[in-house]
Image: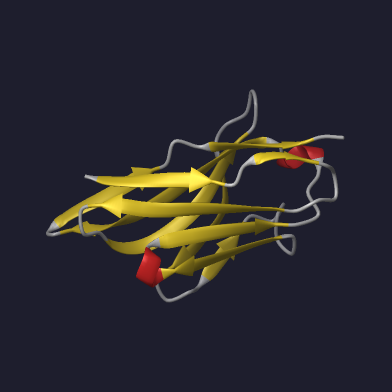
Length: 119
């Protein structure tokens, strides 16, 4: 079993910053890609960005230049630095990872952490 545990969500004012973390734990998990998704009330879950094991990143157009994804492979942890937040960024943010446990391919989701941007 592999678990992803997110932390760092909360309430922030427009224009503010927040940093989310997501750590993988459990079985020995060779992680390929880690990423962040979000789901706003009444909307579908959407991609925020991803990062490969080699450090290549990909971002949604709506967050490009404001959000930065990084990862610490030794800690099996991915981070999401969010700057210049606005109300449209309000959502539950989910961590995602895929990789191998032994010979078994897994895709795992975290439980989500709420980010609220409001004055």
